[in-house]
Image (cartoon, rainbow, N blue to C red; front, side, top):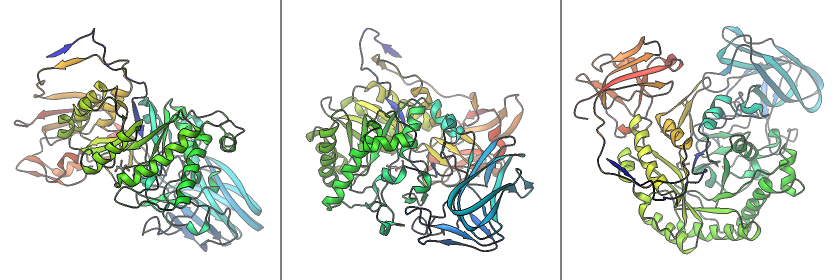
Length: 613
Ligand code: AHR
């Protein structure tokens, strides 16, 4: 039974309470939310990013071509370029199965080229079955200049290739192909289906750009050429300005990040979806398995100044130094930054807090209205967590970022986590959390937990599930909220839970009490949309039907295991007519229909709950 007292006034709930956390993990940016279709467009991939990379990764050469790193380069920060021999060509394979083009849609090609004696470039889009658009010819002459062409796709393909051939010798760089149709038609824009899925959540805030990617690696910046091809922590100044002048960098998650999706684009996207921007800057103490704290005072001061510059970039008038850069990029009006995180999951709480205080003092001196967010390390409890919280409390911090990834049971058992938090202490930003899996039960356990967040909305001010995006062919971390490949995207059960809460944020908590647990046994049936995973650990007789009722797949799990494939980590098998998860992290295992085309149906799932589960 649930008892509600409508006359009692609970905590007010901020409109910004539920947001999203974007990190470039699982290729969430390049090959994901960033709409660029060419992979390794500026030939900067290197073994520093990933041991298997070369500057020609994702490119095939016909004839003679060489990646060159010399003073003839396009830009100091964009070190490599391609020297293409007369009569030669290069072909890009894009991401996943290739470049996705849709019949009738337009695609904008651009290239920076130099050909002192002049040349003609022939640019074509094709797949193994033939051409995908009428080829374009581009006349090139003289020193570096940008050239453009537009294609209209004559056929739909998921396996497209972009080829550039040159009649005479030419230098090429920043070879790019964008769909014309980006989210809100922004230039250098975002992939529409993914941006729309995020926008449909109506997030209160966007935390960016990470996670571990923010706070790890060397702390040097790119202005020193000697730092080129070193793994540098994520620094916002590396990510702004014309894309051909942005440095690329090794990404913490084992690949290259072009920074085409950079700070300007993050702010613009937050504004486009009506969300509060919430950037996180490196604290000069690493986390995520690394335990380094800088003793270089000049470096620390430079990072603190960079953070002040970031606030000016976001909020300063177009006449200020960094506000002017924003205006030149196309946004004279401010982005209204109010919250900023310093650091992520540091394992050295004392070293972190000493440096955090220096950041905070400098920010408060110049921008007293900005909320500077600290954190509590990588765990939900323990010595590091307790020390961090003690320092944050004693240091009178406004808000503390907590992160945890636990089992669904943990989430069910910890609904009351924040009931006992000190009301006089710092507020909580739950910047990352997820139960370990994308199954229905995970979504349900998160929903149950979120009722506890909401009940404590006086102390829990912000919360975001993590991670947000995963390209199914390049996964470093699971579970994730939204999944995609080069042609489609689909939501998890966890997404639907987040959407439910984000699109129904109340004004105020109405105190209530539940005294019994509802009975959830019995068969389940329901329209589950394009993206629901049929989980089978607890269910038998799973039937997937399309909207017209015809059966697409059905299995009592006594039959052929090959009809189903796991999309989670770990393994599973059919034993004695029962579906069995043999993985120690069994809660993470999902089952999807074996036919990859299944996502194109409006699916309905019917399953009978196994007895005894
Ligand atoms: O969300 C994935 C990772 O989990 C984040 O990068 C990090 O902050 C946490 O450990």
